[in-house]
Image 1 (cartoon, rainbow, N blue to C red):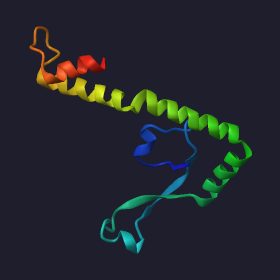
Image 2: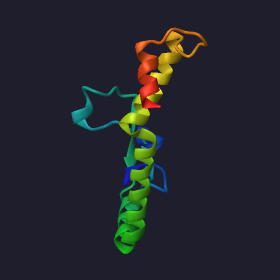
Image 3: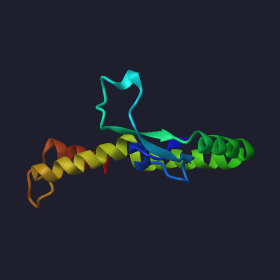
Image 4: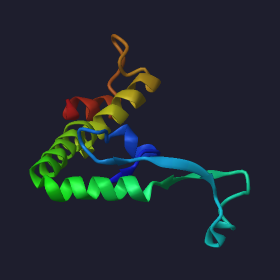
Length: 116
């Protein structure tokens, strides 16, 4: 279960999670006063929708397990340390010219080759 707003939507969707409806509201909790300004908003989850999704999970645990497996596979396929490191090394290599033809191998290009 996740609120339908935020960075986690980069890797979770309705095939890998149960996405709870929300309303954008002004931050109004006193504990957040030092972190938020009066013009900021946050996503307030719909309690009713979250409860309905929880009932769905309870009624169909096989579907919930399938979504969990799909989420796990997505994370391992696209966000494992090796995958993310490979992306990082490729980006750095592009910056330091290591991908240019005839370029002298650099520490980044050697690391990239090891991760490929």
